[in-house]
Image (cartoon, rainbow, N blue to C red; front, side, top):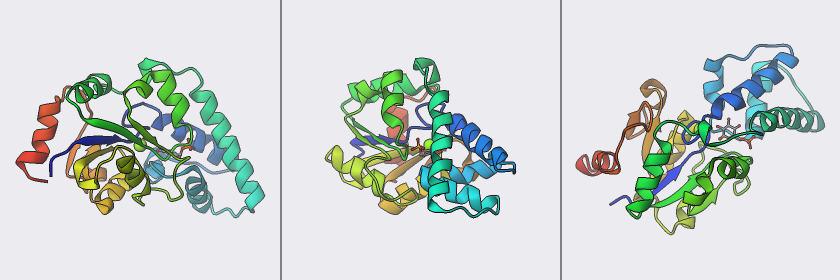
Length: 221
Ligand code: BG6
Ligand code: MG
């Protein structure tokens, strides 16, 4: 089936904000008395704030009640929000704008499929908002990736079936969600982490729409 739409993850695919999530989680871990490495952080990519906190607490061997959990999640979010408070186009990852513009010009429907509840201000401050036909984010979902819910919502939002959409993701859990949901998938990052994807690229830099789509048609993936 031909690809008619592209569903982009946000953090780590369109914008260089995955590192801000990491910095804020690491600050929280440090405050709670333990360290949190970038390698450990791979497991949190694409995961909702609530589920991420549960993971972090487990890693630190800590138990907290619901009220404490909600305070800790707010603390992390306050730090994250201050890190993204002055974003502009410079936080866009290499190749993103040219590819998005070219996809639009060629008539592809574009959607966001992000776990983040902070997606809107990031889309607005970077100008990405003007190119997206539909936004599915952490405010529209109940289940965290690797559940495909957010991608199903995004596909429905642009009127396409999973088989007609390409999901672009930088996280292992996001690729797992795309595969589980029956989407075509493109991993951005490390082949070792994203090996379940149909294809993996180091970044979106210098890839044309035809080169991208060819990968999926020639191999009939
Ligand atoms: C995902 C990030 O996009 O959003 C995760 O990869 C983050 O690191 C998740 O935890 C939820 O984000 P937020 O902004 O709702 O805390
Ligand atoms: Mg991501």
